[in-house]
Amino acid sequence: MEIDELNKKILEKVQNKIAISNFKKECSIMQKSKLLKTAATFIISIGLTASMVFAGSIVYEKIFKNPEKIENFLEELKVTQEDLDSIISKEEAIKSAKEAMQRFGININENDIVKSEVIKAPNYDKVSYNICTSDGISVNIDALTGKFSSFNIEEKYTVQELEKLTTTKENILEVAKNKMKEYGFEDDYKISYVSSNNQSEEEKSYYWYIWFSKEYDGLFNETQSVSMTIIPQVNEVIMLSIEDEPFDNNEVVVTKEQAINTAKEKDNIINTEGFIIKDISAELAIKRMNPYVYLKENGLTNGNEVKQLEDGTTLSYNTYKLNGKARKVYVVEISYENREFGKTRKYYVDATTCEIIGGENI
Image 1 (cartoon, one colour):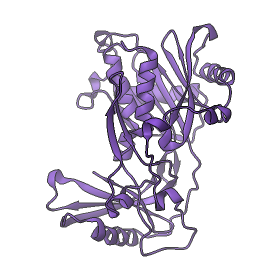
Image 2 (image 1 turned 120 degrees about the vertical axis):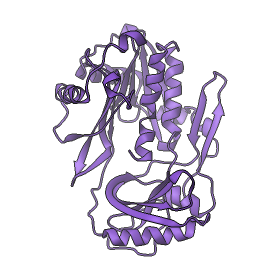
Image 3 (image 1 turned 180 degrees about the horizontal axis):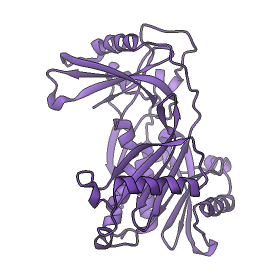
């Protein structure tokens, strides 16, 4: 799984750990922690235009040519009056949450709602309503559009009980497919990722994480996806999230060889450590733009900061805007003879324009 995709799984890993401790934390603290991690756990980022540019419009937006830095992330988390003036009302958000949850066979009684707060994710310019109930249901609603984003349900099982609720990967995938049909999702969502809380011994897993993504020319687009966490045997979905971002479905014009040459040119510039190239591979994928290559080339830090909040929450966040488009790219991976632990670099080379629009430092 790619690093950016793994970062997207962090919320589920956090949820798993909380579940194992039987969710002792109060709902509002748990949701605050999840929001902060959602807003800022992504580590990777984007590059400058390569020397070779192909037909088609330049795909960069300003923040990727010159990434916008968030100077005071904690301050940006605060909800302002300007935010409140631009979003739907609390009543509208609760109505939307109740209607959305009925789709998943869950009824929310308005009298059970104990919290409805506006929360922000500065890296992605997102504002959401987080609605919590007394029986451990948490729902996130886009505060601008009123659309459902995700839900979490507090775990009611002990670890000992969970350890008895296991199944095979084959069985859980059938359960997940049936859930997608039950919830009314279209057939164009395909399974793109499967994991569990015990990868080494899957038959002992009691949490299964399944991603369904839309597919374009055999490539999964995880910015258009439905992800869920399922407890087997009882077949309970305790987490579900929907991501549905616009996608241009740009055409593939660049060849693999051209993409590799572009990545090698850029690596000659940013490989200031003098690593010796051992191997280069490239494959088509759909990836979100990010500023990694730009920051590395310009001698800037990757923007990751960690702070301890007053309530004990450890906040990890990126100080740059990360709300880039997803594009078809060649992921060019370079391995080196003399880099410790076999670490590699990946470059995202746009499949239409041959620009480097992101990357990863593995």
